[in-house]
Image (cartoon, rainbow, N blue to C red; front, top):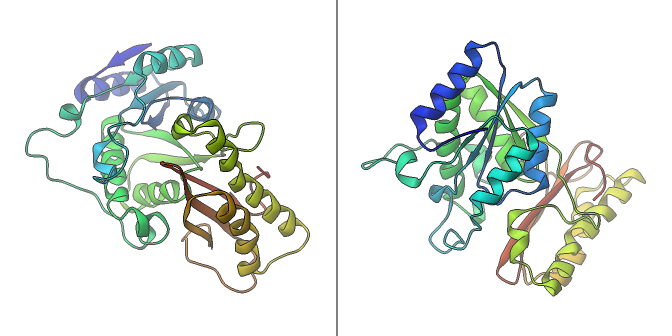
Length: 285
């Protein structure tokens, strides 16, 4: 497994792989890797990638001043071992200066898709995400890029980004990977105390109940939201949103729905967790 720290070296390694006839698979991460991240590496292979590249970069542009940039877990050596064990071919682990040289002033922003949900509560977040991912797409070149669907709005944004800018990137969203009790895997789960972790399961309970109601014939948007909201409001310290939206555009839905995604963001202790369930598509938590 090759490990590079400079953007030029990463670009050259991807170009060299394509020159041999390989299909490049890209898995962008912020490190602190868990099985959810590693399943993205597997999915890249399922999508035909024969050369798999993982990027590990805690991107400062996507954190607001009051958020957890300083305490975000950084476990590079363990991450590299996990990548080796999974058969990763290339890891790009730049420092801030390599990605954002002195005088850096270019950002990439999208429109309507950024405004609801996360956009309300983290208004600068997606500009940071789309900027760094555009840089990674430019460095990687033609590839298949795999993102976790736990960050559902992010996945839809990056699909739109590649489409709008005619980038030679096939953006794939991979299913949420969960613990046996339903908790969605997240690097931030390691922040949780044992009590907070138990309380965090309320999201999975709410989504599971809504999924059961959906399969029993419930189609009323407001009722489905309330099924999720009840346990979440009871167990979490604060709730940013419990919403039901159109999967592709993330427009809020009302009345009777035929296709929908339920999305949740809530705080337990100092930790903010997100989760979602696309009704009729995703398995129950």
